[in-house]
Length: 82
Image 1: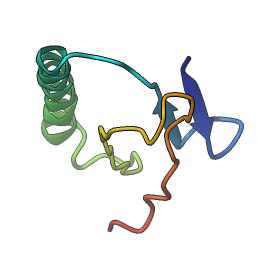
Image 2: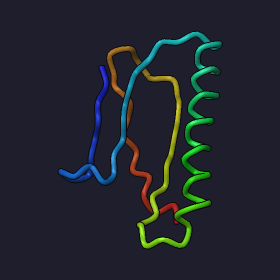
Image 3: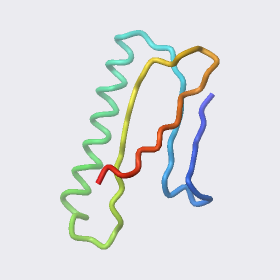
C-alpha cells in the first residue's frame, strides 16, 4: 500500500507514504540508493538552476518505525523550515 498526499490538485507539494518491512541490510541499501539519487538531482539544481526563476522546494526524507503494522505513517507538517 502506498499513498500520495498532495496539498492541491496539481500535487505541487506532496508526501509519499510507503509502509515497508525490510531487514537492516536492505534498509541501509535503500538509504544509500536514495542518497545517491537525491544527490544527483541536488547537483543539477546547484549547477544549472541556482540563478533561475524556478521556485525553491525543500526535499525532506525520513524513515521511522511505525507504531503498529496496520497504521499508516503520520503526516507531519514540515513547512516553515526556511
